[in-house]
Length: 115
Image (cartoon, rainbow, N blue to C red; front, side, top):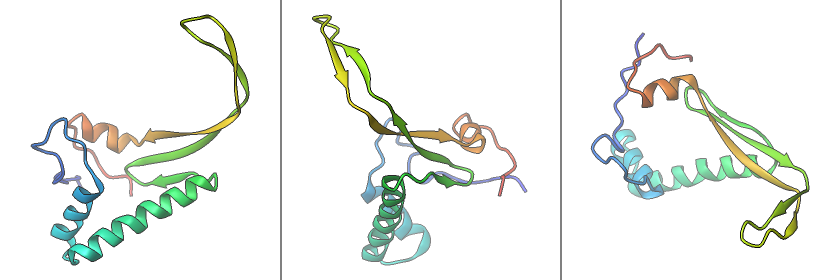
């Protein structure tokens, strides 16, 4: 089965930033929930993703990609203007790895879904 998705959020909005309100409106129009319920659903999904990432878990969304939290150790950085060395504290960073399906989609290719 070919993936025939249409992108309702940005097909004619090149360069536009998609907001929570845009996502809520898309849910409202496509799913049929009320605007309030749609906004609550988007908030709950995003909240669950944030909570999982804060706990150090990887979030994998099939045919979309994975959000991975990585730990970086302490290192010495350098101020580019002055050349002064400064310590950079250990920290956690988040990385997004797009799926092959998403990569193909943004390049206009139609491929079989992985589900």
